[in-house]
Each structure stands twice: as structure tokens, then as C-alpha cells.
Length: 376
Image 1: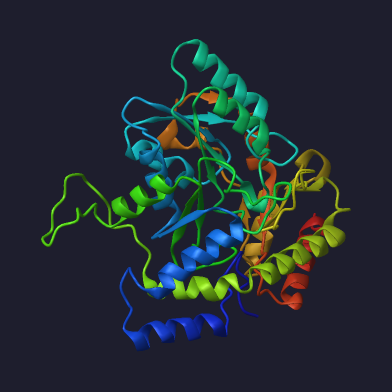
Image 2 (image 1 turned 180 degrees about the vertical axis):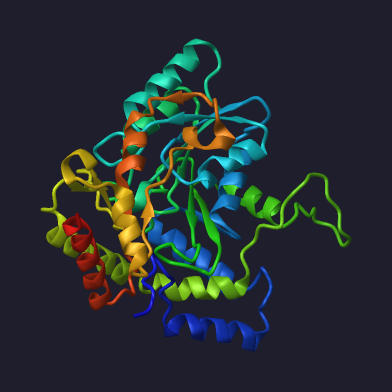
């Protein structure tokens, strides 16, 4: 039996056709018709006026923070339960992250904690420069109350929708409501360009500046002239071709991942101590990854027992994100709350959820988890 991976790429024939078209036309640079079309198609899909295709979601977040005016000594609020790439770009600019714990309804940033932190800092005369709101595991955070608080105090809301393409918040797409939104097309995401990301915004001037900075901030001149420091952050035309093909199947990918979640919950939901990530009432999750928690006091075994059993069967699974305030690199960083994220990390497990995963492989995962619960 072959190894079952957590969320491998799922690529079809349209992607190959777009890439061949790029090679045949010799558009193999970070410029070209696929790049322009990918930006336009993506912007239309998520309902944002402007989209800038970049080399990674991290690059998109870095640019968004820089264009928000974040600099040395500034504070930026950030979701605590997330991958380090949500916070690392804050440090690139010499700013300080401030971590906000999750709430139970969606596992995303707690609006009450976030707003209390903003209000307290505003009263002290030092409101945060920006807030990075992560939409976790395909589930939108509760954006509206956080957005309202940010607007009251002039805080730039940047949505990290790296894991949530295809999700909804009411009738909107996560990533399209704040001042800026970022998406990731890493190999494990719901769509991939092999590597890449997208910055979306309704601010035309911001999008123009992002493109300028992403192409080494080259000034308009016949020679190479630079009045500011930029970055080599543009996506290639070839990768954009892959992205265009992936967008054609986004809806089916979401449907497939949600089907995996339903099958897992039906088969495993009655196991003692097992609880699945809830779907918040404000929108539909993509179920990018099927996530559950295992309460050892009830189950008689813990997350690691099950993860090791899956690994022994050559099945990849993974704990939930380790809260950033527990990461050694962020030791001592200001954190509001923390208990919810700590519990989710201690008990949480992500199961294989790729849109290309066969049903027999999913059944193999289910059987292995059940066996782990039967083991003494």
C-alpha cells in the first residue's frame, strides 16, 4: 500500500495545457498573459477589485504589512493558533506581534479578545498599526466585529486567507472584506501553483504599489534605477498557468474535501472523546483539512497515540498548529488568552483530506483510527 499524504497536490489536464501554452509562446518569466489572466480571474472569483500574483502567501503578507505602514517599534495583532508565516513577516519589518487566542465556535481569533486589546492600546495612546486575521483550516473567522473595531481605531485589517479559498462569510469570500487579503498556493493548499500567493485589495493605489515593490521597485527609466528597496516577489507566468487550471476545479475540490469531512465524522464521530472542528454559523468551511480533537480523559488515549498508529500504517496526519506564543522564537511575546489554543494543540489532529484522495484510502484512514481506539 502506498503512503497516504495529508493534502497532496491535485493537478489535472487543464494545468498542463496552460503550461504548454506558456512554453510554446516563450512566456517563461514573471510576466505574461497567464499572469495577467490569473489575477483577473482570481479577483473576479473572490469579489475583490484588484489581485497581485506573488511568489508566496508570505510575500503577499509582507507587502501588505509594509504598505500598511508597519515599521520598527509598531505592534501588530495576530491570530495565535496559526502557522508561523502569519506572524514572521511582522518581524521582517521590525514590528512586534501581539497574539490573540481563538474562540471555540470556529477555532479562529476571538473577536472579544481582539477588540479588548485594540481598545486598551488605543486608550493608552498606542493603537496597533495592523491586525492579521487568520481563517483557519478552511473556516472563516468572525470578521465583522473585528473589522468594526479596526475601523474605529484606524487599524489596517489584513486577512490571512491562505487556508480558506472557497470558503464563505455570509455571501462574501474571506480575504475580500479587510483592507487587504492574502492567499497561498503552496503545494498542500486547496489550489496550488506549485508555490505562490495572491494579494487582494479594493485599494487600487495599494495594488499598484505592491506590483512595483514586487518587481524590485524599478523606477520608470531606460536604465535600472531604484529610489526604494523592493523585492523579487512576482509569480512566474508558468505558475500562473497552473493556477488558472486549478481555478477551474475549485468548486469540485471544495465539494470533495467536504465529502471527506462528512465521511470521517459519520464513521468516527461516536468514538469516545472525539470532537470535530465545528462549522461556524456565519459561513461555509471548505474543510481544507478535516480536524478533530481527542480528549484523553474520555478516550483513554491521546492525540499522539492515534497519530503514531496512523504513521505506523504509512498514513500522514499532523497535530493542529502549535500556538505561536508557545514557539521558542516568540517566547515572552504579549499574548491575550491562550488556553483555547493550547487545548486545541494538545488534543487536535488533522486527517488526510486531499481532494484527489480515493475513497478506499479514506476507508483505510478510518479503519486505522478505529483500530487505535480498540488497542489497549
